[in-house]
Image (tube, rainbow, N blue to C red; front, side):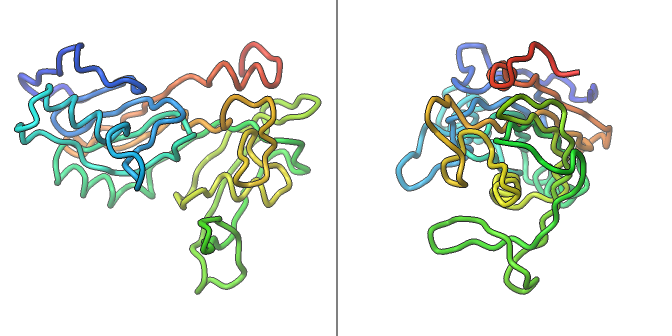
Length: 239
């Protein structure tokens, strides 16, 4: 971890944002574990109960006149849990976004059914329709190239647990790709998943490896697979 952030002071515990666990912070970055159900940024209906809003309050220590703030580097869908990296200044944001495609992002997902190939890469051009559904197209001019690496870790009678290497970062990429394979993410009603009896979307950003924007050190941030994923497959651990 970077150690040359002299006299950096963390915000008091009383400003700890609900729905977020602070994994790491210094003068340049703030890394958190987001619970499912929390938006990364606001939408037309929700303005304050977002990771961005809560973390701005956190770094301002409750002082709304403070100039301290966080900057969006990337996002997770509302129902997806896991690691998010925020920048603490414009230079850090610019550096992280320029390098983002080269950083390693690993997810866990539980999908319905079984994949014929137990390991591989799904590649397609993704487009979005007028009701905000992402889907694959053949024409590179209509969609953006998306690549999703995956490996089947465990299978049960109904579900498969996947380790996913997010090779590109398109909107709803994982959800669309596995839905089109006939294996929607468990709990993903938007992309064909069955909702009855399911507590949450079974998609989790488990690990991100970045280069620190100031020190250029390689940093990896990991969070455990949610217990609910293991309960779905009736297993105790992931080997």
